[in-house]
Image (cartoon, rainbow, N blue to C red; front, side, top):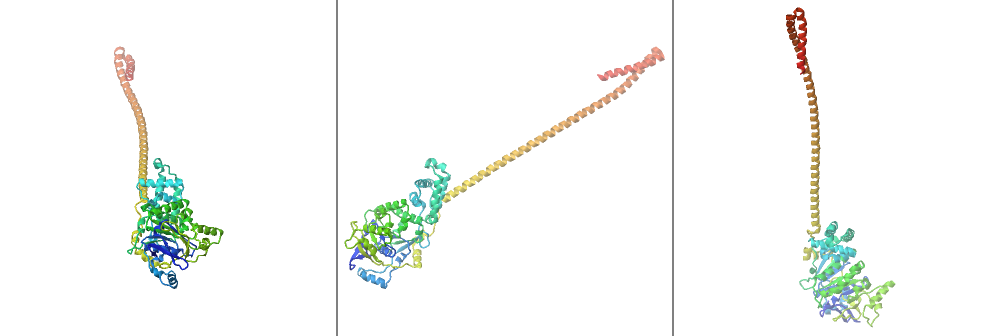
Length: 553
């Protein structure tokens, strides 16, 4: 409730005659709500959230158990509720049952408006913390982000980041001189961490459209601050993703909001229910980052309340930043739990009216040990307080009521449909296909050139073979021609000799006949018949001899 401009959330004193207020200006000093299961933490959270909403302050909280959706449903009279109203004399303060404006979110998009961010918006440093990378791996991740920026490649989702890492590793020699060595082993380790995050739903969380945190800073038409409820029933079972979202959200608020110094009321208040689920699985780097953000974010007008079972669930560096404390009953069954109770008691300013340590173990449901900061920022002494009932229903809203609220939200229209932009993955895939096409074309050209060379070699072989065959044929023809010539010459010589023999024979006969006739005539003239015969034989012999001599020439 709002009373005197302050958040009236509990009463104390023997007759519950003293109101306990939380100064709105001091809510940026953060707070803690603790207590064992069933002691009333959720009711306290709802009462505070309702009050901030009435002040016009938007609220964000993670609903781990699924029991906070009832804030959109007005409370109803019952014997128990009427008894509380009368006990706290709330009618005198104008208490009324009412509902509160709410937006329902779900990273997985099943029970609420999808919540997404891009890899680029989360950035390499925060992503390295979430992935629990070593210093060397974080350096390489920073280099890959720088290469993507320099080459104007958008890193929207995890497939973009994995594609960029693979591309950088494959082209490491090109980038080594300008960006340094990119070890493939480190790249592989980063990819494995990304795959582990994807297995928890990281591929759903990273994408577009990315949530604009300014959408959380909204009020309804009546001026009530919107209560932003993140369904974390599934999310808390995925510690990497849960840590990634929570830390991203705080980092984004810290980086995007301007400093405003001291404020009358906060810009927004965050309630992290079951905070131990975040810190139990957070790395040292994440815890250190959280401590830093919590320490500085109050200058941006943001208040943070952690809700968990025991103060020991919150790291000391974080707990020291939480100025407002509401501790419900603690149970001690082991030496460790008794030590935790003692430590919790020592964190409160002592009240002489009771033993703080003893009271912490005896508080009933709805009772709490409370210490809040006054207007000057001084912690109040511990008070044994009774928490007021909420104005909205103590139960949960039905699935139909939640769905109706989601469907009617303008933010659902803005974020419900996932968009896969033309980012690094698509660009690198196109480049890969282009390179493959060029390589195929080059290979085809090489194969064509090889085929051409082979064909030329085959043609050359055929030409050489043909030339050799032609040469052999020519040589054979020449040999045969030579043989024919020689044969013809021999035949001609033979014929010549035959002719010569014939001529010689004829000539010899003729010469002999002529010589004989001459010899006969001469011998007969001078020597008579005997001389005729002798001279005829001599004339025939001389004629043949003379003709033979002529043929020899």
